[in-house]
Length: 162
Image (cartoon, rainbow, N blue to C red):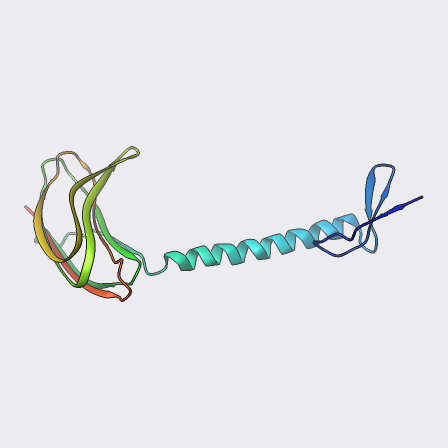
């Protein structure tokens, strides 16, 4: 009457077929579904935790200008990670920027227009630099340092709106 089929790989419960339907031996279908949902949720939590660990060490800082229109910070850029300082600037704003790092970093100033990314400044593997951003449009601008090295690097930067 019932035809034996291979064990279900997921829960190792014997499965039988009868008239096109599947019946699980030893477990009610609702219990089986609940057990599978619990397993799926556990696997999903582990996967999401792994993704969160992958971006740990990357830091995004919001620009909060002081009363004298400056913003300074000292921090570390972990190996393989980045630090980014972002904030909205009006059109025609000028920001003088400078930084010193304990090792070579990739650096850029960028902003997004739709899906396109614009780079008013971009330098590879520099430990110190300075310049002036002349904001052509009102936009969120970001100063970004990426550490492609194998050791962390200290970073000190200073921004001044004019």
